[in-house]
Image 1 (cartoon, rainbow, N blue to C red):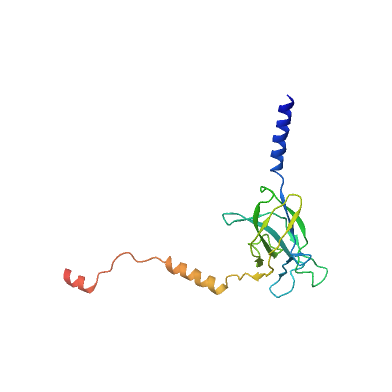
Image 2: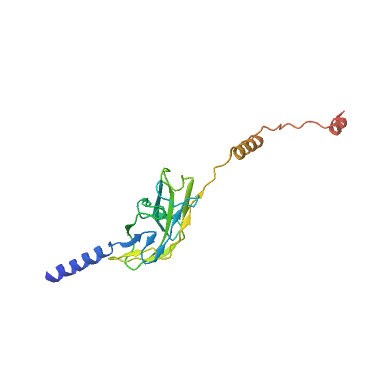
Amino acid sequence: MKTIFIVSMLVAACASASEIPGYIWFDTHYPADQVDAPIYRPDGSGAGDGYVAQLFLVTSGGSLDPISGLRGFLTLSPEATPYIRATTVAVWGYGTLDDVTVRVRAWEASADSYEASMIRGESNDITVRLRANDFVPLVGLEGFTMQVVPEPSAASLGLLGLSFLWLGRPRNRSRQPTRARDAAWS
C-alpha cells in the first residue's frame, strides 16, 4: 500500500510539473544594455501616453497568439516614453527550457485592436528559452517606429465604384442584324 501511495505521489508531481509555465520579462529596456528596443511614433517621438504594446507568441503556423496583457508606455520623461511598463509574462503550454518565438506589437490605445489601429508597428521575431523559476529578458529585440496605415482615398473608392457599375451594366443580348445579313435575306 505504501508503494502505491509513493508511485501515485510521483505521478501527481510529474503531472503538475508539466503545468509549470516558463517566464519572460516583457521589457523593451532591460538594464546592463541587454535589451534596448525603443518604440517610436511616426513623428519620431516616444510612444508614451495613448499607445499600448503587447507580447505575442509566434506559432509554428505563423499565427500570433497574445501571451501578455496590454502594456502602457512610460511617461515620466521624454527619454522614457519609447519604453513599456515592464512585467513578467507566464507562457503556458510550454515546458522549462523550451524555445519559443515572440514578437512585440504596438498601436494606438484608442483602437480596439492592432488591426483596427491607423498607427501601428511590430518588432522583429526573437527566440527565447523559457525557464521556470527565472524570467528571461527579450535579448535580441529591436526597436521600431510605428507607421501610419493609409486609408483608401475617396478618389480610389470612387473609381472602384465606377468599375463595379461598368462591369455590372446590362448588356444588350439580342443581336442586331447587320447590313450584309439583311441583304442576304432580302
